[in-house]
Image: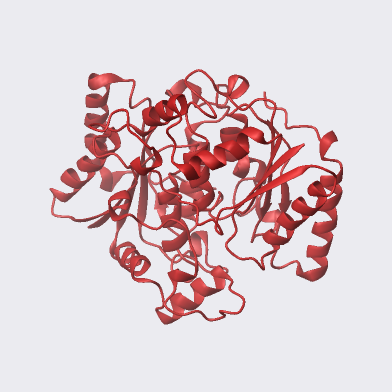
Length: 221
Length: 221
């Protein structure tokens, strides 16, 4: 199995980094090939613009979406995008590690979605969800939060639960591109649970990784 | 009234740009002061890192959130963040214009949330929602989509409606910081509705702007 780890935390001493190391060591330890995109380390460019293409189809009136489709057809993506797309193409499993900031992904990871999962590469007009361009792959989010599990509920402070918080990525990005989506691993209150709490999270996550082949994807209607 | 327009579309010929121009001309035409942050034009830095602070409290083991609190207390934000925070502080109304990409904001706008709406400035421990640090301000999202209104529904292709799609920004960012949230203006299928459809959207939006003082904020439980 080829595994792509996309990791978006700026701090190497974070618990997010420890979870990412688990993914690399456990999945890599059983004969899989593991590639890691450490977006902060790579200084990955988050904002999209015309520099994302070696050549423009319509420089006089740029439409980024149309330029993505053109670049997909003719191999005109900038090298940093092309390199990431090649990793995605090879991957059977994409594990995405990030801290939940503002109920979503860090900007640098959002930029990876915006630029790498391009029209014509990951999806296209009429080619979404079941007909998405990345079928046969699985995706899984591994996230840390500041807040505890109780406040992430319909009746809790945030007025929404983690399934809804992550829906715009699980359903809106991964499933949209045709991937099967494994249940996310969520480490709530990663900072406040203390060393013992974090040790337990790592154990739970290791157990999860060891049975990853048998995990049932989320069933969307 | 002081208005801050935060605008995140890379293409000056986009319909998003036309809506933004309406905000500037209509709200600016009635004696309000309007400031515009055109994030792409500014080449706004989306990814957060230690360069966001003039000085670090704990350089040996950086925790970004703690550095934000320290910078808020001591005035240590990098100039680009400080300039944006000053605009937010002055604003009575913040209008945020963006295209919905991957069911969320473009990376460059997500970076504005991550970096500008810092701990100690826009919120703090125990200072969220009703106790958020930006009370007395109103916020409003103005968005364009590729897809039509029908597919944004619980029973539609996306399996979710626009209120849910925008919840992580309306509730999770604006309301979280203590702002009152005006109903979003959504221009569905901005590309496909044609000139006539876009003209109608602009008319509707202009009418909305003209009664903005009397618009009722969203009531969250």
